[in-house]
Length: 135
Image (cartoon, rainbow, N blue to C red; front, side, top):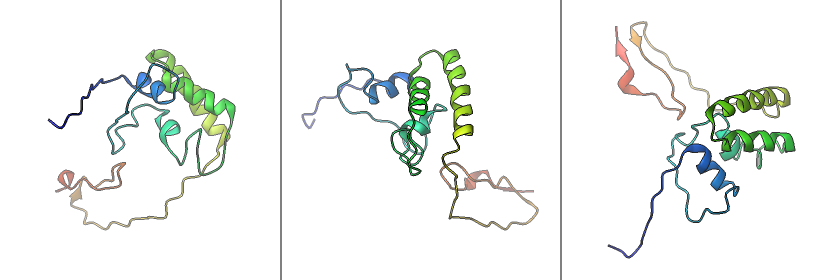
């Protein structure tokens, strides 16, 4: 109606990531992904997308070619079995490198009676109230 032509093309995670990293030169356009952590659908997604823990940008100032290669390989491999092997290497690397320590200044204290059940935090740091019930 407003004169803008779009062509939406859903992609599998490895293709989406490889195109965004410039690995696939045929990509042209805007990349859209869901927010609220939905874009973190693969084990290496945080190291691709995060400005805190990413291989290309991170708060620790840690940059390493092996780290970059593992993240790039695991985030763009289309074969799930091969990705699983790469994730094992990626996980071992992160444990050995230990380049960052997560410290949260936003501690939350929750008090509840013994009959309150289902209270938990989500990745989006909220409490799903619809899951809480009384015994």
